[in-house]
Image 1 (cartoon, rainbow, N blue to C red):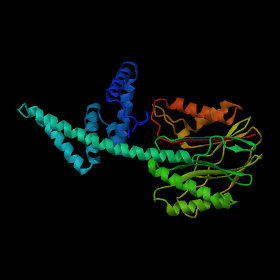
Image 2 (cartoon, rainbow, N blue to C red):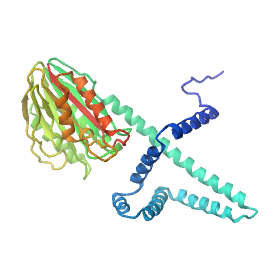
Image 3 (cartoon, rainbow, N blue to C red):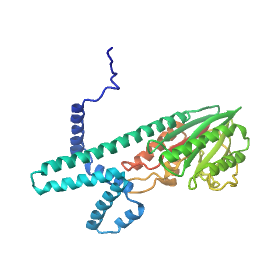
Image 4 (cartoon, rainbow, N blue to C red):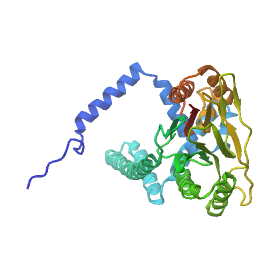
Length: 370
């Protein structure tokens, strides 16, 4: 029986792959911002391997001393992150490569053996990376499946939702569901961590909200219960901010609770205003009291809820987009649809950040009463 493989599963041709890689390499050298790309990569390397204390010490040193210590600390940090067996192999490989400089009969053998040992370590590390990436991609797929539709259908409302994770998996919560009758619940929050840990906490928070919200008419009681569960089941240093609100069909009467999140903006035809700051974040203390607030939006007015991926976005000069930047942008946008407003915000943040790395997830909820 003959087995055939589909084009999507066929192993790439190594020769064609290498030729394409070299073309891309030289295209970047002669036509791209090589210096900027190398600088960004080195900055990411330094931020990953060196803690904040060492980075601050390096900033206060002279150029020669700074470069010498940067290289030494990076090498040391890399070695310490290897497993014991790989550390020993690395030392042996480096020793053999150094010994190959003695110009003896066995120099070539030492060089080949040392190079093969380093290649073996690289293969081990690449294997670990690919396994981790596969697991993160699976987590990303699960998060994508848990996201609400981008344009939920709510009579009397024009709603647009947006979520973009800075990494494979994110720690922002964005959810929208029909609770019962004419009640629709929207949640936007941010877990105080990053990566897989934050994603797991976010998934638990989302599941808790979905399970409890149909049973609570009082948003104060609902968020207080979620806070108790977050404090009981969370890690000692974990907490999350949350804006939870309910939209009624065909009415502009919005009820909401803010647990430690950035205050939403209300946009009218005359002005843009920021709502009052909220109560403490979830998970900090088991008996925190949360206040329910109400808001009456007229037709055409809108509510903007966002995560810190908007206001804390940084450009290459390390400047923040900031609440002032969002405020000024909302003032300029005028009476356009929720999707147009949301897409303009996302585009403006991307333009501001430029080539700087994204460090925060970005979530947006734009809700216009129509």
